Amino acid sequence: MNGSIKTSIVGGGSWGTAFARLLARVGAETELICRRPEQAAAINSSHRNPDYLRDIELPASLNATSFEKNSLESADLAVIAIPSKAYRAVVDEVAATLNPEAAVLSLTKGLEPGTLKRLSEVLAEELPQPAASRILVLSGPNHAEEVALDIPTATTIASNDLELAAWLQQLISTDSFRPYVNPDLIGVELCAATKNVIALAAGMSDGLGFGDNTKASLITRGLAEMARLGDRFGADPQTFSGLAGMGDLIATCTSRHSRNRMAGELIATGKTPAEAEADMGMVAEGLTSAASVRDLAKANGVEMPITEQVCAVIYEGKDVRKAVAELMARAPRPE
Image 1 (cartoon, rainbow, N blue to C red):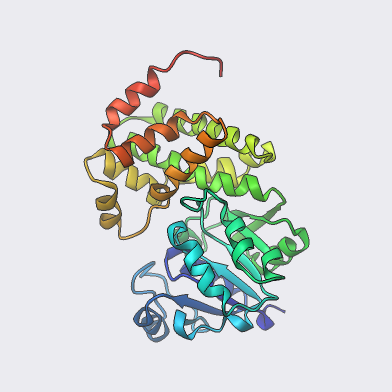
Image 2: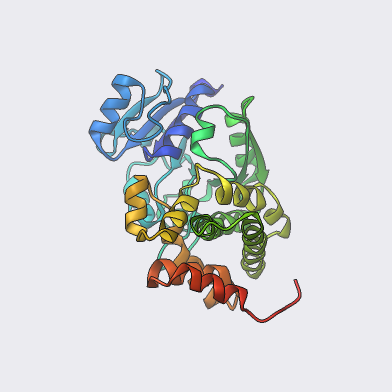
């Protein structure tokens, strides 16, 4: 059945590449849409992405193309794997050629800057019907570097359409990739946006040479911030103890693969956010979404002190040690 399914992945970064490899390996006809034609040409000739996951051999059946030559009009599944700051502009571009009957899966973890909307809301606004009602989100502890190596991984598929989510679950299930379905689209997306901000804090802790006590405290109190925000928007509390919540938070705050943790570590050692991303050669989504998470919390009366301090460091140049001191000096309170 999978061989008759046409899939198009928009975004030739690490996660888009890893997910395209996964789809090709389960037998779907798979197209990876890259921004630069030369990147697509290199993938087709060498079966490797010259810019991301360079050591991973890609299936010969995986076809790469550019935005100008994509064939989204025939896609059964369109996958969006681009940074949140460019999300609406790219989706608007994609919508012009998208098969209106397609299912649309978002891999991006963040909120739209300015509007503070969840990215599924952006999709619903920009896509034609019925595709605008066929939206899914994938989230969880899913480092592209490990998924591309077929290291055992579990993930969450969230959607308001549980039948559609079950279809995708069957499509992408393998002996090393295990998806679970969750109807809590709001909670899964808020977890995905917020955990990146906490990972920046965890990286700053690493950069200052702090230990396990600090990291565990940040993860635990960061989870409390995530849950408070989710509660304000009616999310299911169980989501925050699941793969999209605690699972992704642990991975993002502790892994050597985590861009956001690494960005925080570099910032703590004196790099600016721009310099940190330049050093990594990749986007750290938390550097964009931190302001959106903070502003969403403020607008809705939700207290998020770790997020506030992270924002002060990355946007205002606040000294990291001063931010830590202010967090530790907050008035005592019950847990």
